[in-house]
Amino acid sequence: MTDILADWYLWTKALHIISVIAWMAGLFYLPRLYVYHEEIVRTGSDTDDLFQTMERRLLRAIMNPAMIATWVFGLMLVMTPGIVDWSMLWPWTKAAAVLGMTWFHMWLAARRKAFANGTNALSGRHYRMMNEVPTVLLVLIVFSVIVKF
Image (tube, rainbow, N blue to C red; front, side, top):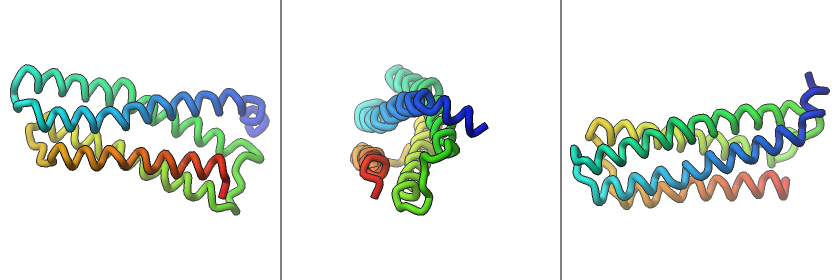
């Protein structure tokens, strides 16, 4: 199995990067949709239905598959011989940040359900602040992988 992973390393790495880019696009965009949904849209209006459709499709058709692919290809990279040295700090910081990113994804999914149920209690300002979470985690991940501190 490890021979196959080594042979396919560059393909796996490329697919991992593509998956991360798609996932990050959703993680940046969905909270922005929530800002406008909360600040501008009246519950039960046609625009409310439109926003809920956009949010649901973004989450289910783009973000969920991208997150799953990111995890699958990332774990394949981790299992590839010679790629990760667990005695260093960087794989642990990256793993913690990826877990944080996954938590944020799940938090966004729960917020979508709150909008769908008409029970959203968070402000547009709250969503604006939360929109910075994936940026901080992305910076930590990139520095961990590239600088390997």
